[in-house]
Length: 100
Image (cartoon, rainbow, N blue to C red; front, side, top):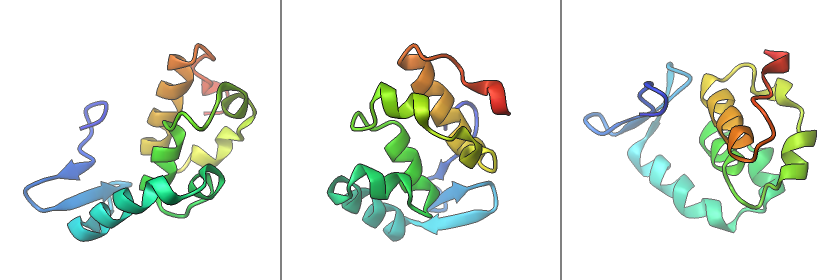
C-alpha cells in the first residue's frame, strides 16, 4: 500500500498500475532486478511507471533535478504524483502541487 492505495496485491501476484493495468509477478521482479543497472536518465524516461517511480525516489536524482523537473508528466498517474510530492517534501522543496 502507498498512501492508502494498493499498488501490489500479493494474493494475485500483480502490481496494480493506474488501477487498470497489471504487471505480473515475474515482470515485477525482473524490473526490480534490472533497475540498479539503468542510468538514472533512462529510468526517468522509462515508459514503465514502476521504473519511473523508483527513479523519483532514487538518491541519484538530486534536489536540483527535482526542482527543474517538468511535473506535468506526472499528471496522468496518481502513483507518480504521490512519489514526486513525497520526495519533494522530504527534500524540503515543497509539495510542488502548483500544476495539479
